[in-house]
Length: 169
Image (cartoon, rainbow, N blue to C red):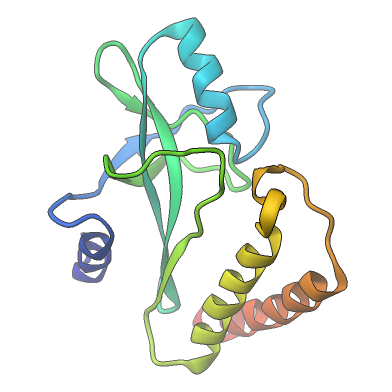
């Protein structure tokens, strides 16, 4: 595993190593709704919920940690059962016993991999969108209306994203 990923993970959960776990998504479940899916699944199939972070890397651009939960079967096997926008066979998971999901969203943690100020701007905009979508009671809602302010931020992020694809792949 890359030293940059290990260092990033250590800054989030000291002395805890990330590891790969399989993804076996449930059918007919909402995308990226792990906190809604897991309790229902456990009620029917047993096991327990394990909180932590999915670690995503966009090589040469950034590393991002997304707060997440996975299923530990009664046999002790960790499986990610949550459908995602992008189909993957496994995720890099960093367990975090110090955090729990309490109904409010938790912002992703992002780290640029270069000194490109546009990547820092992209990370800043991502945080601004998180704050806007989670003001007050919005933090407890799944669907939030897109305001002109949020749309302006999203538009700038889209332009930056396209720039990164052209420059970094």
